Length: 104
Image (tube, one colour):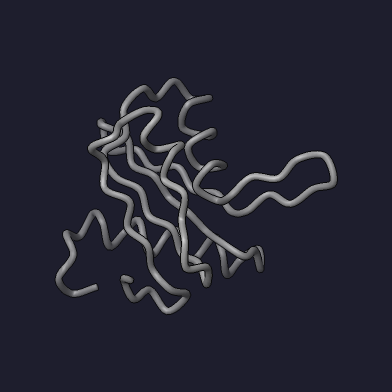
């Protein structure tokens, strides 16, 4: 993460921490256009399934956010669907890292 902007590295760290704390399959963090961050993990209930990125964006939107600056997902999965980020800000980068924090 040495080559990353410190604010982007912070997103990955927050996503890693959330994932580790809950034992979830994924952790995600998003930063809005004012610098606030929102962190979430995978939701896997019988009646509700959300990826960590969907959960983090939902938390941001429910707080009134209309624009995202960046997002990060920590996962073992190879594919991350960025559609929920694109709904708000198609130009926002989505960083994807493995559980050790290494970018893919």
